[in-house]
Length: 169
Image (tube, rainbow, N blue to C red; front, top):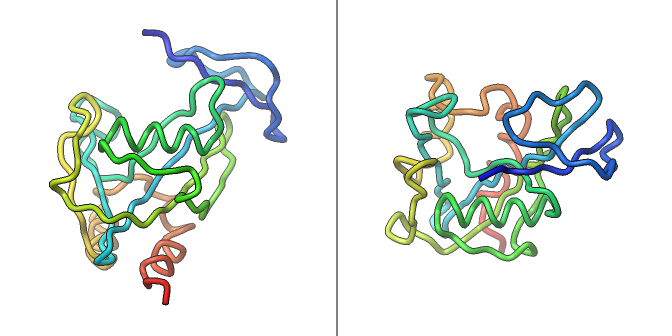
C-alpha cells in the first residue's frame, strides 16, 4: 500500500503537493513526523523495541512515525500510538514538548500520561517486537548505552520528559 505525505515548505506551510514514502524528498520539501512518549500512573516511561528489519533495528524508542496526507501532527500522533501499541488517546491528552526542523522533515514530540500497564498493549508485529515501562533513570542509562533512538534529539527534550514525570498536584 502506497503511503502519502503532505509536503510542507521550510516555513512549515502546506504546499498542496503530496509525496510518496520511500522516494527521496526534493530539496526544500518537508514532511511531518510525530513522536509520542507515554508515562503511566506510576511515573514510568513506555519504550518500544523496533522490528529487527527496520532502520535502527532492535533499538528502543518512543512510538511515532510519519504523518499521513490529510492528517495534522496531532492526528498522526494519535494514529501512530494506536497502530504501534493499541493505546487510544485523545488529541487533547497529548502535550507538545519539542519541535525540530531537519533537512527534509519537521518532528513534533508529544507526551501523555495514561493509566496503562504492559498487559494493556497490543503491539504491531511488523513495527514493534517488545515494549516495557522504565524509570527515567533506566531510560537515561539505556540512552547512554546507545540503544535508544532518537540519539541526539532525546538530549534536547529529556528534561521536559523528566519534568512531566512529576504527577500534577
